[in-house]
Image (cartoon, rainbow, N blue to C red):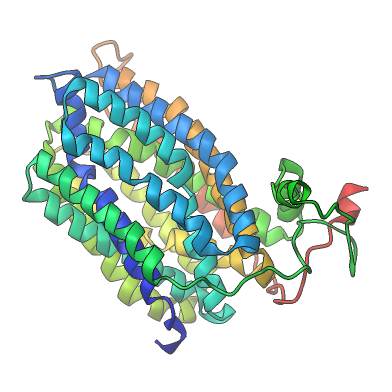
Length: 441
């Protein structure tokens, strides 16, 4: 594992950050219901609020994440990572203090604001940092290990939540979030800088000739803000990159809709509570951690990222359909074991993307994909939360509580079909800078 040297402090930082995030996941549904709809198992208000939150965070992330990724190529990963890790502390502190209705709404607003900054930025910067440190042929395993660290945090956070009260849960989460930011600032060394002048923009007029720019600080900063045209040019530079972006969009469309609706669906359908949510998440987390830390490093060199991607997406839509058709409260426990294969998906997408750009464009590329994922996070709750609320209510046109979950599975199936159609192309050399002059003519 010598090629992972230098990543230890990043892994510790991310472990603490995701531990804090996942620690509150099993409790937040009950806290929300208790604050807004006490004594009820079904409440349309909570479903709509969750959907609105996801839409607004998605809009913010779609703008912020590509900018953060682009700036990190110039300013360094650590400098940009400081902001989201610090912002993540404030919502947790709010509910650690109180979980009454007013404090919940304060948390809700703060969580939206910080989610815009943290939503995709932490993952984008972490992936770019790993790409800086790891050779091209070993990135799939490295990205899998990074996801495995996240899954390990998921396991410990969910397991801890299972044995804590709601008040203690948020207090411990707030402490872990603070520790993550402090540890990162104290110990994490920045990755190699991209502060050379060979690739500070997406665009080159012709090979060897950069666009002329004003050297003033204002122009220097704004030249790094990626436009929609920049992102389109980047995607058009490689057919594989474009196909990976399409897969990422439909995969995240399904996953975002699934995460937004699942817990409210299970609570209304089978009367799940905090402990059952924790058990369900714990099974998924353990399966994911084992797969990413042990299976993926072995399978990636043998099968390649594209085959693993298709396997992961097949497991994704299959397990969503199983949730939708669940006929008893034990069926979701079986469905969540599909996480063993499902977790291959995101690391494989990111590895494929990283190989299609040069070393000075990792932040741009990962930020672009994160922005596309954020766009899908906007669409998913708009489409699926009203559908979930309708089919869980007495106004449903026909009795099928899992109908919205079934529709979500169709998005994942679309991503699976696209992944099968994807064809491998040679990796772009580390010295290549994308020439998009013909696209701007």
